[in-house]
Length: 292
Image (cartoon, rainbow, N blue to C red; front, side, top):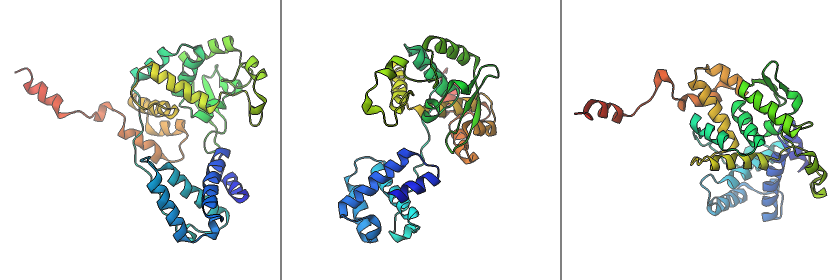
């Protein structure tokens, strides 16, 4: 497992990625009583076939992460994927869920706590990932220049994002009321003092990942949105709405921090642009014959 951890670290992957890969590789080892590199491809194929039949999920995520874990094990040992004849995992071509502006407004309006309203506002208004909003510190906010700095976001890259005047007003009100000391979205001082010692390993004052996800889910339920809403849905909505409002695709790519324009071009398939707005033939049918 040490070799996997070393490879994950060198490639800049997170601790959670290491834990995920290790767990799946360990499951294979326990199943056979051997480490996977001591198995032959036929045994691996039998095990993967067993996982496919066992999985009830259409995405078969456990199967895929087992293959990813085995790939990393082989890479860490300097072996090719052919060593175990691992199958290719085809990426599912799914379009992201996007909220309408009305739905985003309903989420913001439905938040009862100022902290939650500001959290939703900054996730949408600055297209932050869950990890990025959790890592956000007071020193990363520049109200004079109306900018927010993302420090070492995905891909270990920094980037600057514009801050809306509306968001700045909300942030100032929130900071004055909550008085965060370091992280913008942190646990209150009294909460930290009474925290369980069992949480001391890796514990800090930040909002947890689950906490951020819970706020988004609660806001979407309160807004009675039927779509499957996640933290990343707000990021997708940010990019789509900017495109619809007239921002060019290269600027959006830069704001999102994408390494390739190909990842940003997907929003061209979703955005309803005035120059190429799609419509149903029922619209013209009713306009031509509906009043007769």
